Image (cartoon, rainbow, N blue to C red):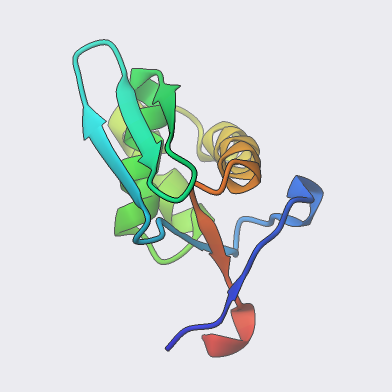
Length: 107
């Protein structure tokens, strides 16, 4: 089983980080937003369509950088800009317990 680190300091998040959606988090897409529910806290969170696509990319990819490539290709935006925005989003999602940062030692 993978080791998971809970990180509240988003400044430690790097593009090579491995981020995943924990089992206690579910999400559903709607036309205007993606609704994310943390089953442990009972709190709902709304993401705009772009952030919802980023969450999907994080679920698909092995690293934040790989997710940024997926999103950059989808929106036809520079990878570096998307990577920066995705790292910022991940920091916010980490602080809310909606994603987890997998320990780099397991790679």
